[in-house]
Image (tube, rainbow, N blue to C red; front, side, top):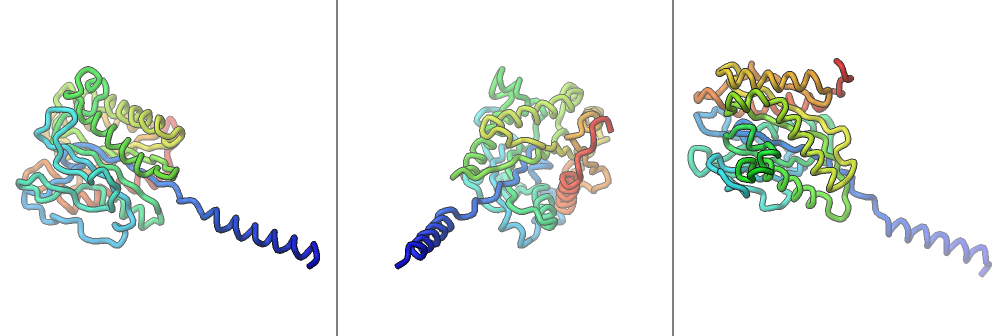
Length: 296
């Protein structure tokens, strides 16, 4: 056997071995964090004409991690309506409150389905919401003074940490692309006056948590804030929306999504199923738009 032939066989074997030993790496997760109160949680009571989000073949391809806190909770760690068992599942409705709401589901369905229809793959949603509550519950400074008073910041932080630990198993990369936020109907006058400030702080605090886990994983993260329900109903609600709008005007990484044209359910404070799907679609459209230049 010639030396040239032996060398050729060895090279071919090495090429085959390398090809078998180095399979293609899993693509990065494209992660979005959803938080807020009951309209992001997504009620299904009050005679909702669309109590379920319907079915889509895209749902089985969308990773979903969730943990929702009860509206009656006053402590940290919070009492939960339910969670995904500290595991990544696929997109689905969530446990209800055992009372009027058989299930909860919010804008996540319209949001994720819209992105999937536009060709976005490897989507992962992390949802940590609460029924009711002022924006002070998401305030890290309040949590640092008294974890019970700021329990939703602690809960959001811990939910994101656990979810990203699951997502990053075996070294799989992830990028947190957005914070989706719908909160404010329960704000007091003082909370409302600080709505923009507290949302900006929440986004910054979330970035810090993610960067501690994986540096660079929040690069380019957007904040998408939806207009609250019954936005013109009270002075605190008007002030809450004004604060969110000012933040979006000043910060090109923040987009304000109007919802005032969408109908409410009979209770006058919650969006029904069709409106929740549309809010999700509008939030997805905001993600798909390029970030505007600073100063515009």
